[in-house]
Length: 117
Image (cartoon, rainbow, N blue to C red):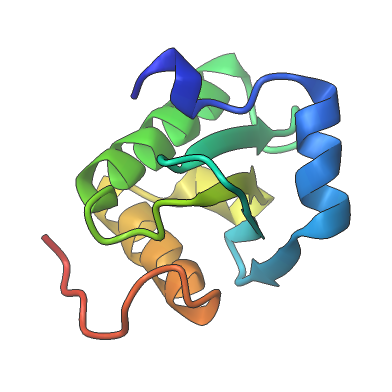
């Protein structure tokens, strides 16, 4: 993922939290906000309550890789903020991808007919 595809600044996170819609399951909360950019942007939030630095970084890698694999199917002009909950620490990559795809389908950011790649 390129740097311009990331949400880094607090004010950008706050825009997505305030103006976007949230969708959740046990492992992840997804905020989606329509924007006017040509590409989607992604912001990640993994609290210290989830685990140590190694665990938090592993979860963030899994989320980034999932979005990289789904980039052609996702809504292009949207901002996504993903918040990982504590049960996400126990998932391997395939389980976390499946869980993220589930939330994104609920959010209507992914078409229903997208299969696991």
